[in-house]
Length: 125
Image 1 (cartoon, helix red, strand yellow):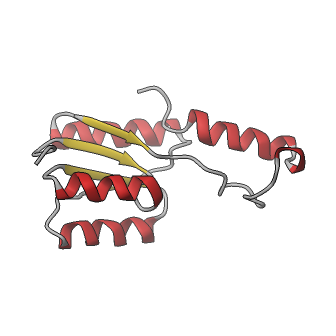
Image 2: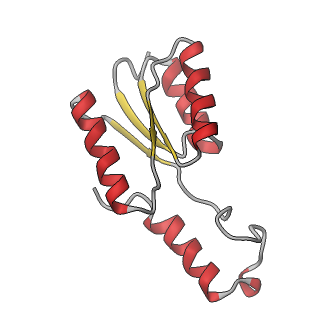
Image 3: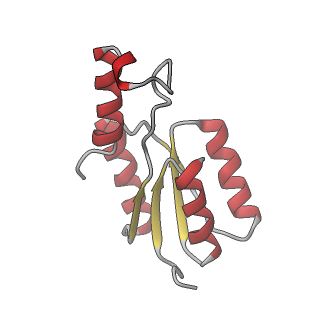
């Protein structure tokens, strides 16, 4: 049980790398604080983690909203006293209309959204 009683904040916990990491840490005894911006997927993920014997509270959070991020982190520290592990799995291109666009097909606005999403999500805390 590598993660026994460790508090793990995992962003984008409801899918992809975040979900896979949440599964592993929960299976190995960690407390997975699942953070995501998609409520339905987050609820389903947390239910599945808990049904499998894990401990997985949830936090709905927009990783691009600094106040929301600070409130989320603050609530985790208040509730658990600490964060031992951070897995920031936020990223990708799903926030723009054509997620498979090549660089030369992107508008400047979409380019900026991708940069903000992939490099600035979950700002310095």
